[in-house]
Image (cartoon, one colour):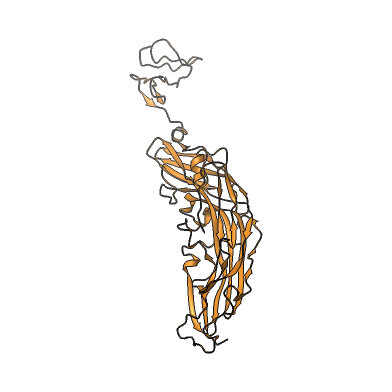
Length: 410
């Protein structure tokens, strides 16, 4: 047999020897595949003259299996409120990425919602308003990689670890609202040196053992108080004049201490940061609301004496009520979701109410009746409770509106 010829195998074995080296194949249609060549190249013999190379059909799954994608996490566990970087690596390069997520949200580096690109960030902060804890969350992130050669997908679970808080020393001390008389005026307010209401709870942060960045995670949280004014009545009555202090905007209104200096919005007062796992911070809260009035009517057109009671202070009416919440705030979450950035630990309502009759013919320190009253302080409840705080930029103390009006003589 000459080189390049083929034995069609009339015998029972049907052997062939395309290389002329005496070797045989058991099939008349067999192709020789060189291990050093393309695995899909076949070399059948041409019965007329010489070997001819041809390409065998591709496996129909080959194109799909060579496009792959893998999701990589920058940390094995996500911290509440802190963005966790996700990176998808597609092979071969040059394709596009489409993401979805359940149990969290996806954003770009600027914090805007996003669903495309090789690298995104997952974030989640979901406190329990009933207990004040930040429960563990479990998200699932998915990516689809689309390439001219095919499509690949990957899915990965992501744990957002829990944070617990321990609150102690929750007692609330009540002072009084009393008539503090001087030679020039009287103020209905706290006894000097004793706040009308004060509380100093201690709050400990307890990170889950799986937290990968404990110092940063803890310091991303701060603790303090929110307070909202829900009712107010401030009236001063002279013989022929009514002076009323109301609010220029409707209640409820955010409250804050005007003498405490800069406080992070919308906290009533200072809000210290936690410094690490198991750190304990004291959340000081106090208030001493008041109402002041001069003994003599300041209205220029008020009728002058006689009679002797003209222009004299006759009555004062003072009432104010509040909702208050002890909260832990996630500082990073605050930047894009202020209302959702709080883990509510405790709440209570309180108020004070003192109306007095005034007799300016008596000596100072005995002109007002009654002299004092204790505030009403409700029970301390867990979590957020039935009400929510006002988080407005403007504070109640900046929205006072005073009206001076003539009134029928008394």
